[in-house]
Image (tube, rainbow, N blue to C red):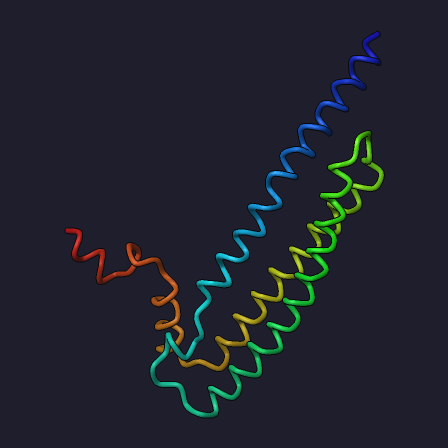
Length: 151
């Protein structure tokens, strides 16, 4: 009897986890869209870019954009498969768990690409320009000039 209770408990855990994931996937997609809407070009953040810097930055960001878009397309396909399995009746752990792993690996690859792009961009910018980018990337409440006003 305890063995049966353990199996029922495990099935309940899988169902709960699946439902949580089904609810989280649309939110993740919405967050991605929100990020895209608020992405700003570096030339909007740095006022004194040379033509050479602009060319290098354009090449870096375009190559990265293509790689990230390809990874996101793969991620979307995996998420669609996950959603399909979650919406099916029965236990599909054998199919789902590798998909969860694949989705996590794709997210990791996206994060690595974004960080690598940041490093490449930093190599093109001067220290003062990097500071401008950091300041422009902060939320208004975190910016030093706004912190002074609060006092």
